[in-house]
Image (cartoon, rainbow, N blue to C red; front, top):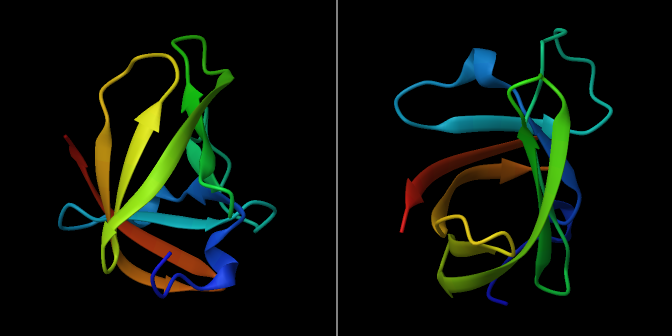
Length: 106
C-alpha cells in the first residue's frame, strides 16, 4: 500500500451534516456527533478488507463486508461481497480525527 497512514484503519462514521461539494465527511466511531435516524460508515482494515455500514429502510444498520485496494496515490477501489456496485473512493483529506472522501460508482 502506498503512503496510507495507519490511522485510516479504523471505523469511520459518516458526518453528513458537513458534506459539501460532493465530498463526504467522516469522523472516527465513538466521536460525539449529532444524533441521527441512522448513520452509514466505513471500516478500513490493514489486510485489505472493509465493512460498509449501511442504513436500511427501517433506519437500522446493516454491515456489508468487502475489500479495498489502492489503484493510485489517494485513490481506492471498494468492492462489496453482496454484489452491489464497486466504488472509487478518492481520499481528499485524512488525519486522525477526520476523513474526507469523494465517492463515485465505478
